[in-house]
Length: 486
Figure (cartoon, one colour):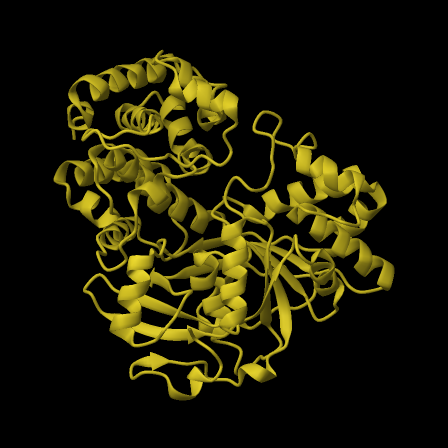
């Protein structure tokens, strides 16, 4: 395992922190210490700590699962250090040890330790990667869901929270009481206007708890929007073992990511921020244009590729994009359905961006899994496809590729591919009622899933019919038979 001692004698080719990790002070608390956070936010912060050592990160895990407990133990054993391997499409590789994460707390085991950090004046930013569906927004009302049982539990016992909403709002309450300035709440999830979504969620909880506290938070805290981008696959035990052997660095917590990374962030902070512009973060007044390009091109085409790829039995994204038919469908989707309806930010070529997307998908060294990309499809469809679908329906333009994508998603939820192999679809927001719809033998029933709610105010009769037709073709003749004409 990696420890502070190993930093003194790293293997050749492995870059260590260019600062003394013992001098780093904590300025950020982060909920959701997953691979993406470790390859993105922590990667950026790591590069500024030599000149700005007051922005170390305290990581917080919210779940008490055995997997989470094991992860926490591994972080502590490794002094919260881990390796990041960046891989290029041509196979080139670089490895560095990241030291930005300076502590890791399991919230269920020590909630008061989390709250102590949250009220500490040194903590000026609270960031999070809690997934697209983690903000507890009711899909029907578009408001914070106060009926959620965990939220109800926190509202009944607010000083001993269990949810991210309870922790953040209780932390802000204690800061107000202690005369400590509010912190910035910084979402790093793959959501359009993620700061606005976070604002709605946390203020929704705060209003239910204490309207006066909510007013103080609204006045004093900040919720900047951001656009985040880096493909970061899961790391299996097999990949861990291979990395250990190839790199010569024993690491129980390695992260692998593509060599591409981007972070566009609104410069709206309540209580200071690190100078991340020095390491490539773009600070802007409005991220909307950048969000549109990334979400509607990269993310939207990622799931357009992977839903049918899972059905065809492709395990990895780079395998799927090598399939000429699937690649052509994604290219046509971008060229005909997406690019004509996007206004690019200044200096951004949509055609070059399209080409970079397809190049990134072909990066075999990343080894990204199609089932990972296809996971949480309900939330992803709402975020990544809605604008494109609405524009097609409103303009009465071609819906063939969208219908194929929707049909592929619904067939994928059945959990069996064309080869007869079974897998487990990951839909963390589904309850029993949604699974009943998804598993129904009636091809139309699953159209009532929340994935498609965002355009139900429009006339969807032709689209629904096309989806049903495609599902029948996929079921009877296979995915390739249902692919739209180019």
